[in-house]
Length: 107
Length: 123
Image (cartoon, rainbow over all chains, first blue to last red; front, top):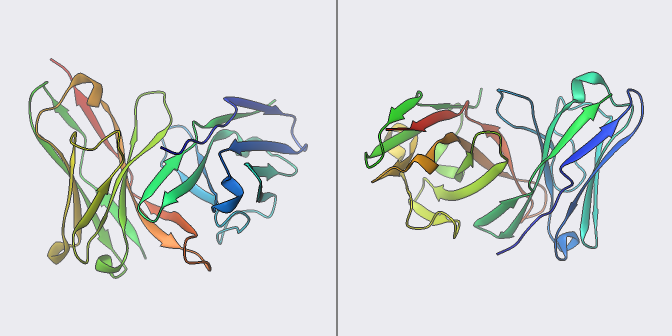
């Protein structure tokens, strides 16, 4: 089965840029999505189709996907961005997988 | 407004059966695949399976095949996740989510999520 690997944790200072990676075999040949989850809440979509932002998601969230790695970038990170982030891809039309998740800490 | 509303928290004993639900509203329920996602306490998201309400076509992650059953009743816009014999290790939050497709045919993503159903299995 297909696997996605994320770093368990990333730390960033307020106002700086946070980058969270997601690695998988030929991930660049698939589409990646990213979800933000805060404690006690359902996940929220922040990036889909590699680099598209849903309505209501701030412009500081961006994404890229090439080779074996997809990256979620948060520019000008704010305290409210502290959360767990999950990448997702589809191995087939009816088989999906999530990465293990990355805890973003804004110090 | 699109909504996915899940059934309430459950406390069960090992060996008992359970069926939880996910009711969609505000869109054409039959036209969008519904997914189930598990989150064990303090852990990450795990994709369990997917069902198309239009024809009840269900597919499962290999990790969950044979462990759960996903079904749907499109007449009442509701998807289900059920267990025939619960184990303590089934204790988790379970989410349903609607699958959307982007501007490319295989650019799938989850645009709406339910609020989650907490299942606790304990003797």
